[in-house]
Length: 293
Image (cartoon, rainbow, N blue to C red; front, side, top):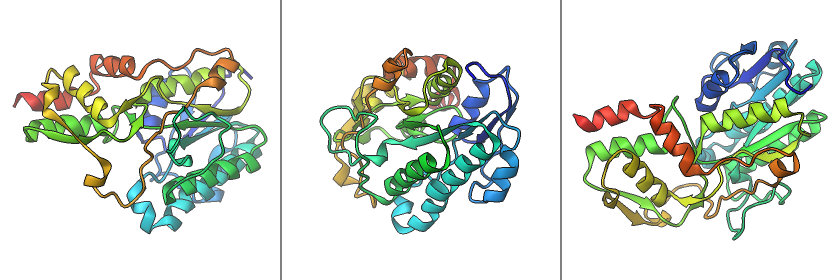
């Protein structure tokens, strides 16, 4: 089924990744309802929507990490049961299935990049619901792709670089944590990797859809300032405890990319190269204009 040009159903089509997935599939028949238009908690509705699809991609999720601590049932309904609904609907349709997951399925205490087969060990409610979602997907679909990602930014929606540029227009300095390490990932890159994965004939399984390399949020913020022509010294160092988040944050969220190599596919490019291109392609032009006023 490599290179299939049948119908693609993108669940969560109105989000950052869903929007870039549509752009990455210009020659395909794509249906991309937003989460408001198609609620993945509604098993019957998802089953109906998936009928006739060749590929189903579940980019819908409850991603409010802090809120999930007090509303785990709500997160579970989307991230676990909803994911199962999507996988089961894809299986019923005979469609290939891609489930988006997260670095939060790990506890963030590692010192080396997490392998695709590392045991799930989430530290908080959001991660628990996403980890269970992975398990339910594996039980509901005979051969799913699970693509874990992290630290996403893109053109459609709020994200870290956009917040940094907004704060740069409002404040002299911005304090950003140095004790969390991850892989900033542009959703346009991630969308392209998912399409490549599907078109390549690669074996289904778990893949890590994050950029190569790593950075702290502090280093990421300074990189954003530099590309915006701002003085990076305006970004000051602090630690996670200063913000007292309700949900635990992984200190180390670096994911390994061995599965791409095993599938004879290119390893995702470095996060800094992705950020360079995002700026060149005007992802943050509105915020950059705001800095001039």
